[in-house]
Image 1: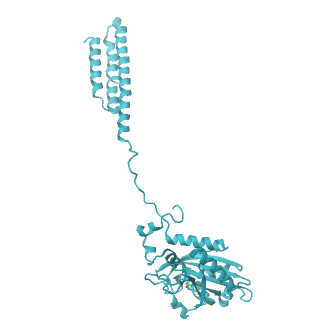
Image 2 (image 1 turned 90 degrees about the vertical axis):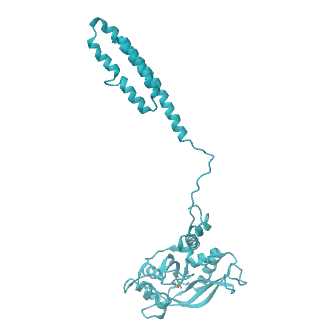
Image 3 (image 1 turned 60 degrees about the vertical axis):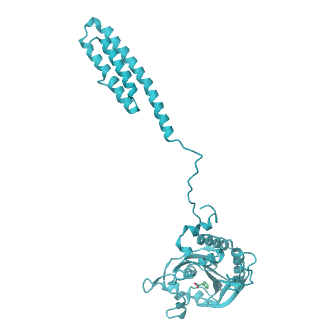
Length: 347
Ligand code: PHE
């Protein structure tokens, strides 16, 4: 067949194929078919060997021109298909910025965390250092060294989870007092927050809860120091108008021991549901460190005196936020927790 005709036929074929190209992938396949290795143009060049010598230059030129023509056609088509594909993608990825956004439920700080932070803040402002003792304690640190030897009736005040005969889950952060006194001599001024465990459960008790213990030991520490510090604490946590009062109580490791009440911050002392009509709310236990405990830790009780106090963190949270069931503090129910949204800064 005449080379010119063959080329015309191929041109026709290429134009036809151009119509059918619907993606860049198909474009590349089509281009390979004509311009690639072993493609139509190359086989035309191969056919040159059968062309008589004198016709070769003209034939070669025809094929070259055809190749250049095809190259141009394909280049143009490629540009077009790329544009079409980009447009398709942009269309499919179109974002309607006027659509309402999806709301991501932002968390909130747990009321326990809020109160803990507030307490730590108040006490570190008074110069207390933080000390954290272990949650698994020995019977010795949790009881014996706190003047509560075996068979002491005060052991019944706390229902203890024993792990072995000598190991237990600490029932009070007071255990940390002994560790600090044994290790560091006076002056001591520490705050010991942490989880404690007791086999007890009802609306105001949970088998695991948090306490915050304070201990100050130095020369000349008196009950006035304790009272003054408690006044300051109560005003900072419950409000400037709140007063404190001390009632005699008993703890084996303090002598004298007191129960500390604050005037009701809800009714101002007139009597309401929160204070059960009494005008006062019990918030913590405290006292002067028992001489026996001091000397047991190698501290001379004739030279040094000290006070200690311990409070239930959840109890403070319940009072402050008006929570009536302690279960709410441990359930992790987001409907409950969302009430504290925004408090204590960004989570
Ligand atoms: N450890 C006591 C309790 O858990 C509280 C307390 C601490 C009392 C320090 C006095 C001094 O009940």
